[in-house]
Image (cartoon, rainbow, N blue to C red; front, side, top):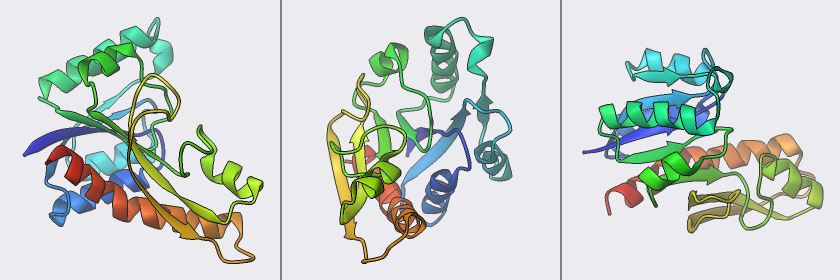
Length: 188
């Protein structure tokens, strides 16, 4: 069984979807570690509720990205992690992790890339007036949401849909398709 580490910075709803997918045998993996840059966030609480080890850190406690990524790498190696899965992790991945996990870092983006990259993909797409919304699952590279696309899932927004309506549908796609796609990638 493949060992994955999930990186999250906030509420952790996609992390919970991954936990549930493992429990229901949709995702054949072991969540060996949660990495969070926000100690005490809801994602860390979810991990502890499910007896998943947590490495939570504050970036300001390290001199630079290389230093905290080296600490993360140590934790990943201790647990024989094979893949990194980003689930709302709000930091860019640096060279230390990219070099040690080439094409083994998977990200979920709440827009149809290459359009609307960055931290506000849903809002940017909504404000642009698009009619088709969706998610992109891709490998991480040194750019911002520029890595090779693994898969995309989309829907047409109803006339009069609010931003909240679109966000709700995006989250439904994420929770269904992200764990299943991770499973395809890591067990290919």
